[in-house]
Length: 171
Length: 424
Image (cartoon, rainbow over all chains, first blue to last red; front, side, top):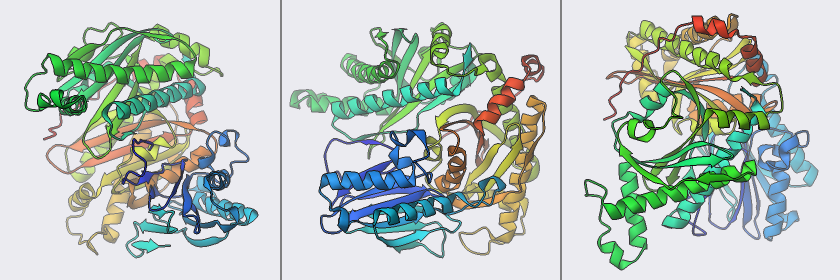
């Protein structure tokens, strides 16, 4: 959901909807609700406090036509777009670290094959490795949904899961 | 008149673009943050549009007539309270002199000043939408002077418009919602295009053979039969008297579907179905309704833990889902003269959006948009709020519809009745 704001640094957390990505710095929080098989990808530069969150839906943007227009939709293009925008804002490529959450497999439907969540996780990991961005933490898989809140300044990714055993995890 | 997914996709982009511009202008005007709610293309009968409006809340609207690239009416509708709040904000922004008179929320009727302020706001919003559409279409749309409308029912808003669909006509309606952040102000926008103008646009935007518009009648009949079966099944199985509150056919971008689902923990059952068409079907209840249903179906069951549903509860929900799914899909198969099989139920007890996103991801491999058969089944006086989402594979659906004989549709009678729901 897009918010049309007036003042910079308004206290409401910025919502990052499906296929969207957002960049921020400091104590601003970026939030994605109700991730099932979608994957939340958080990148941040601990030195400058610049970071971003993407809410990716599909694994492979390079194979899709519209990934230029919607880089946030695909795990691979979302990571590249986040990284590029962060560097434009002053982040240092070599300092950037990553955390991911989501990618669960809620249903065992025949049409889902090996699992839509797993495919997203694998694609994100492969792209991070290709770009040399270390994956600092992850909370992925399972068969339950998650809501994430990311603070670029501290690199904290809070994951609230609907599974009562897991509750709230701080990555 | 024929339509295809590409043409509808352009319409959808148009609606999103317009809503974005309108939201931006509202922000600018009021100095508050605004956000876009869901934007939908609905295929609705005149009867349903009227039912939608007829919720006994006071509404005010600002209406303009469009000519040029799109002909029809664009209407911004506020709940009366929202309109007054907007006017108050606007007048207090205007300066201390105006602020003296700005305490207007107690006033029973709109006086000249508040009416003209509300009209101004509505007109700026309408213009935002229209500019967005014109941008996407790269064409000129002319706008009449705005007209202030007030009332509880659809009559003052649509009654005198020739283009408004009669009860049985299926109209394409553009619907968007914009809300201000942190307050209760929200409004709905409707674009009611003229049929001939729509036909010209569809012709221009279409890139494939597409579907004959009249076959959409089949869509509607599917939605109606499916919904009716669900309500009847639920009543038989739970003993709770249920009825169809809303059923409509939306055309939305896949990403918009989870946004539409309540941001709370929901309980239900999910299915994949196979045939012509194939796709996914979800039944979602809020937790309270789910507990009520389990109590009704298995009175002896004891919840194993406080917020869980236990084995008995889970299997009760799955069983209900299974029978509702059969009923729903039989309703479809009957209209389409085919058979549709469905999987065993998958139990859901999770954040609503999380239950929907695997489905849109799977469909997202091959399509960007989806027709969503959106149904709400309710019970009078008891907690029973069931949202049904049926999301067919797009190419299957197109084939299924093209196979449909329009004559057959006529033979399948419309019998759905809407129940009045007390919202208080």
